[in-house]
Length: 218
Length: 244
Image 1 (cartoon, rainbow over the protein chains, first blue to last red):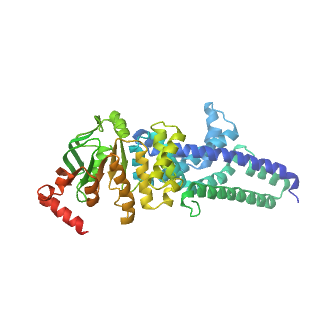
Image 2: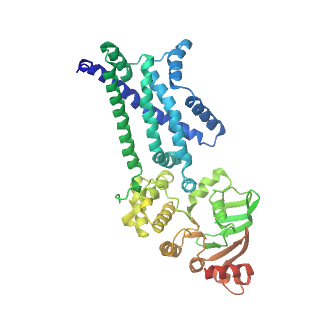
Image 3: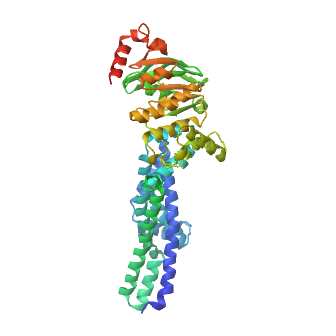
């Protein structure tokens, strides 16, 4: 097969994609939780700030955000390497979408449950950590899965800031071999497998978080 | 003691509590009766600080529930059981019971857990301690709710229509436990529609109507023809509830 000598190179790109996505996935989850907490907080200032963040980053094309961070910031003296920029940009954009999903999970929590927690004397941070967050996550894990899958797909845009992740490497191989059909066919399969793996993981996580509703668990 | 003086509470233009005075002493079981909308549940929700008073004062052992600094202490002394159980759905029965003792009272986990299992055992749920709320029947959930309240070792137990969401059989399961608690001298404020049961466990009965406290009498006086029954509104309420 014509691509055989290029497999290690493509594999390196795939690994870079996986690394960037894993970090960004974690980052967007952390940002999403934090921003969702702020948006549902009783402080008007904090919730306003969080709303602005979400509105801003959901309404700007990802590639524009990325170019701004990578090509724009150095103008004012802020240099960040391509990989870090990519992970940060993905986390920030993913965080905006995650926070939306998590926020609706929080708003769906039965107020009676929160009252029970409040009356028992639990502090607000403890209520968030022990009750609000786990309940919101278990209801929002499936929509979060879609956000994460989108994150993997969006990561292909990182190739535009000199990062030779999967798509970037594929472009190089395609132009080296003049075999775009084969190269991009491989790319299709690899992305589909990556996102399929995430679907599987999300499904397993959903079952685990909602194990109390499974009939066979006593 | 729990002391309410001139308690006022409105929702919008609807006056729900209109000058309630009530004392609950340690060791008493005080049942609060009244038709739906009379303000019974709101009174309990004012006692545990879930509703803010529009006027008047409620203190629990002299801690003012309207004062944020006192409220934490007031809440340590009281515990609430809710009509709709309000268990934490993602935690097992035993986790529901141990959460606040570990987090608020700082009881070591192992000790909290063995106490929780003993409590669950005492309400007949020893074998279901590791089940999740969704895997329990309504009556079992409410028994977990009672254990969750008792685990905080409260001086006052506030019970807000705790059997209203249960069928008669499950109601009996839960009331049996209350009867047990009443015998051991637990102080309770019991908002309920279970009149006959209230009669058997209460030291006093309070009747609310349209946000006002109509009578506050020892149980035997409440049901006497020349006591509470002499009040036309109460007689009407009791005869209607008995027919149902």
